[in-house]
Length: 114
Length: 112
Picture 1: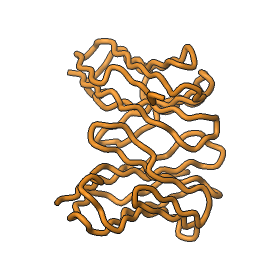
Picture 2: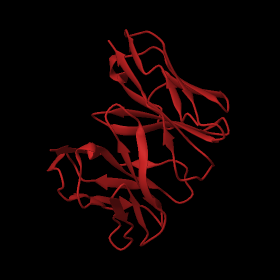
Picture 3: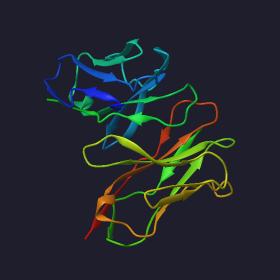
């Protein structure tokens, strides 16, 4: 298996623009997670899905952030409008079952908002 | 609430030195415990895990023992290599939960 795939790997945009990050989980995995990593806050869980349904979005920082999972093989994290403080590395991870204990991470998307 | 407290870095060691990175946790019951490693420019990878008290997780020469009495899961390696340079994260999966709680990460640099 190719592992968790994220795109783009790097994104540079200007403040106010819409940003869409994409994730393809490992085939057969039922849970998907979006994380944000910054120097100041470390690794933060933003939202996670189980069987394509959002289960906990309490980590989503503001209404500017939204995430969708239209099917088992694709998820997006959208920021609209983007702000410089959104600059971070965004990771997607997937796991096999609802209560499984191993998450597999993608390589991340490094977002820079100017 | 559930949380993980991890030794702050950065840690710099010479090759073949011994490594210990401390990790303690707060949680009810018997959570699962993990160490993840993040190499430069990459995502996190599971290094080892333990799911019950006194379990020892091991991988690539690294070990960690689940100590319920001290609520700890310290990461150890007897002889580090330059290729071990990375950021190490301790993580906790509470009982009945599906999301991990991560520590702040400890950056390890091994110099030749």
